Length: 453
Image 1: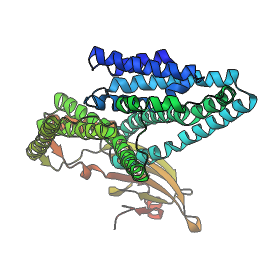
Image 2: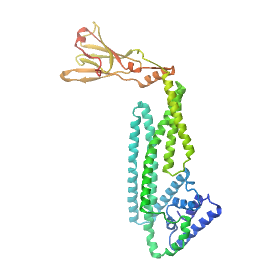
Image 3: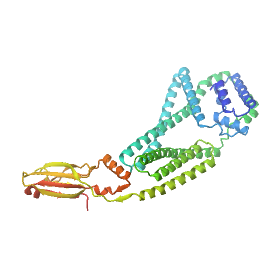
Image 4: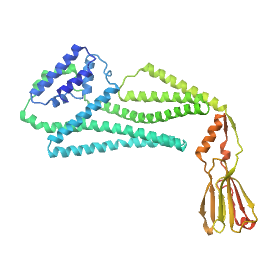
């Protein structure tokens, strides 16, 4: 930043103070920068000596007994990131346009290193995505596929934002500052300026206005390291919580839609809303801890209590509603689903993955060596078969069971709409009839239930 940008930004940050105090502070910093410029230092370098801008504002406000967190709103984070991006862009252009070939080559190498670091930032996101997919893997395939796609998009968006912030921070705080020092050091040496006297004259004002450096003792450094470790772990948990928030939001929407279209499960709506509220509560606590925002303890406590009450009462009510459904076994209605014609010179054995009945039906008029296999099943079943070659020239046609998910789901939803829920597992069986003349049927081997004891 140049002098004008710095003073405008500072004025915006401390505008909570009285107008007279703001003007006094702005004048002090303006004079300080002017004196530095007169001694041969550029405006950018003079401003850089103030240290981190946010810490500078915090120290000024603390000197005037103002809460340091008052201006750390979400919009300021975005504004700071935009300002940092502009600064990085301008400084990069300046180095490329006025720097030597060695400076440009070194800058490109540093940028490559920064991009590699951003790539390593992706590693925790891989573990988070895999872990979340493991959690939702028991869900039906289509629901799993939708939720997995949404979570994948959300995680990748978060990663892009995090990687961008890391890259801008590396460029602005670690890389470009060094280049500015390297490119301007020759001019500084030529002018041979001694700033010691100026610094001594400004010590008292600097301490009052927050221009002094923070304590960089070893213990203070260790404390900051531990705080950042905790915040990093909290950030990873926040990412997981955000993914859970997406899934819970989908669950709440599904419960509402299901209740409106099919059968009213008020407990599911209340419980899922309580779970949604609790997830938002967790995300907010983590977010405020990471970015040092103030906590409204009373509001957070009330939110927690409401979330627990809603979730608990919703689960209890849902259990009562489910218990009120009519659970019965159902005798399935079997219809002819598939019909296969086999040559017994090729297929000499019929196996069934999960058959209820396998019958042999003698048809006198059929030719030797030919059989017809008729497969019966529920309306939503979709049987199929594979040929398996065994030792000693034995070949079997193995019939498998598969449901048509849409038809089965529609059947279940239609039953629930009428307050009934059947044991659909009894319908997970097929009935097979093998037709042929007696001589041919005697040569055919049959395995009724391939996976049964």
